Amino acid sequence: MDAEFSLKVSGGKLVNASVVFAQGEFVQGGDLIIASAIISGDFFLYPEEKIVEIERSLSGARLEKKEIVRRVMSVIEKHKLVLVGISPDDIAEAVMGCRSSDRMQKQ
Figure 1: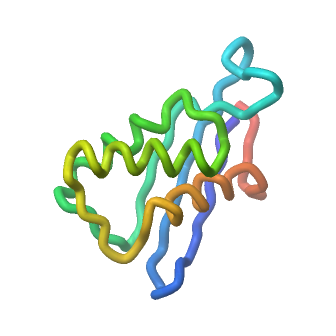
Figure 2: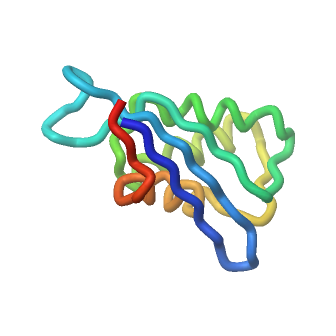
Figure 3: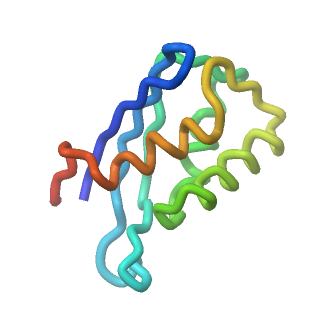
């Protein structure tokens, strides 16, 4: 399944999440598992090319806010990244919004 969700955070910045969920044996106990994710929006990340590291870190994660925040924070700390206009919680909220997105499509 594919899903998209856009979140406007306090301060007016926009966070977009586009998520592909794993199917079949990758789905554990009915949990949705993220196969891949793309994060975009009108926020800033320094260095900006490291957004792919955040996206890669979400692969294999359960669609659970604490796990998503933990993975995003781990990448930020490891690469000493700076987020401007949004927080790891905002990224997690956008990804979590994909669960109830009216733009969720079966592949």
